[in-house]
Image (cartoon, rainbow, N blue to C red):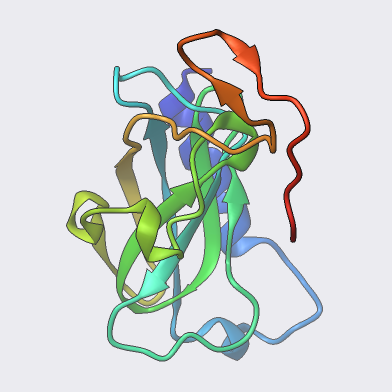
Amino acid sequence: MTSGRWLAALLLMALFRPNNSSEESRVGYGALAGHVFDAEGAPVHNVIVWPEAVELVNMGPRHEFRTNENGQFLISMVPAGTHVILAYGLEEGYPDVRFGNFIDDLGAFPKVNVEEGKSTLGVVVRLGPSAGWVDRRLGHSAASRSVENTAFQN
């Protein structure tokens, strides 16, 4: 089964799977599916993807999904409306974009309209270059060695 068919099959199962709630509880929701790629165009696995509502106040748990080994994601039960699709993966070196100092432009992330009872397919999220981190060691770049007798306070 091709990845496109696999994704479509998963999406249909997620939208129409039987559960204990009534069919009316799904009114006002849709689904999203797509891929996450890095700056070079390679799929990024194990990053968290979520829709951030543009017109609505985000309340309750965030609808999120971790990408699979092919960078694919599927998010069901997304409230209908316009959303910016965001992603981050600390383990992969991509910072949490909810903190403004890690992103220059939210416009770099896709904006999609989720329609009630429908699936929005083919969403592409492109992450910028991975970020650096602080590991609490102080070094001297000219000497290429650690600086002795230093301390950090929390």
